[in-house]
Length: 230
Image 1 (spheres, rainbow, N blue to C red):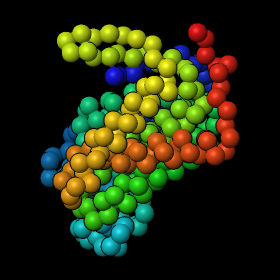
Image 2 (image 1 turned 135 degrees about the vertical axis):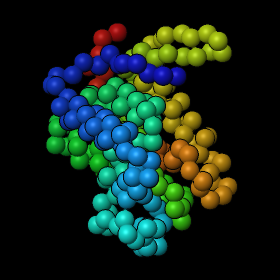
Image 3 (image 1 turned 90 degrees about the vertical axis):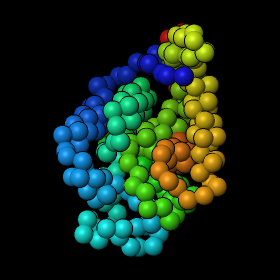
């Protein structure tokens, strides 16, 4: 399933969401024009590498940056156009409404903490990985978890692939997001069988989503059913 847009109007312009998208795109464009050796150096310098936080040792000491910084910088690096495009699509669909609800300052704090939760959970499952982890999807997953609590019945215009058939449907957010979350767990289970060799950081997605969902559940936020039109 590929979501295209939701039907929840916003009351204010989603400035922070737009800025986050713009920064991610700008960084990717910068990556795009780097020669491969320099791109690899950039990734290893600014990506999040779990073993550096569990063993307190730098994989490449000559590329070290202040401790803790890569938790944040890794959120703005992407491994390819589809990686970037998918993340930015999800951020636009779900981020503008959460920003509208929280306000701009609280939204950026929530976004960054969701990213921290994502790398924390990923590190628990693969503490000795030396594979760089990059991408905004952990933080965006937190936004999706918040959306699950606040707008569970909002209709999401979604493309569904059924073999050779493609169908556009309006899906309740809770169905789309539960399906998405379940897929992250299912696809992530094989990674528990051995050391990480790279690929998708499924449990970072799980960690971000779980944080966003739990935060709004534990703070007793009620679904905002009055925000959308049927």
